[in-house]
Length: 154
Image (cartoon, rainbow, N blue to C red; front, side, top):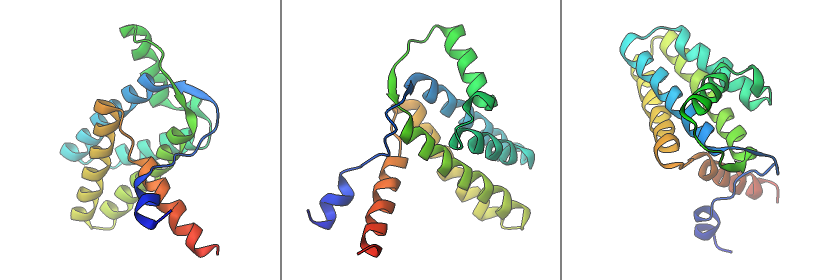
């Protein structure tokens, strides 16, 4: 397979454990809301809070995640149906969310306000795509990272 086909065909990490896609989408909307609050009020604890939550979800401690709890409550209150999807891509995306949240906090606290703004915009765009269209860019990132590491492991 040539390079272009390897990168164009996304390959997501698979765990063979189902989670609710609709709940993940609702969580993305809550993340987008929090990023909007960060954008307008620049309260340092918002990206810190997001980082902690992403760490919990990426690490497999989902039941301790406050965003998971909020979205679970929303799913029940709005009576949104269960739509199964694999947990692997969601955990990988949570790891990327952790990296972005920590990067936003560190760049802002270091005085690189414009850089933190760009990172916030990119993260908000990814959350919007997930929430609105169930489109996760994490699979594309995973595919690219896997491709790069496969070239180094030869």
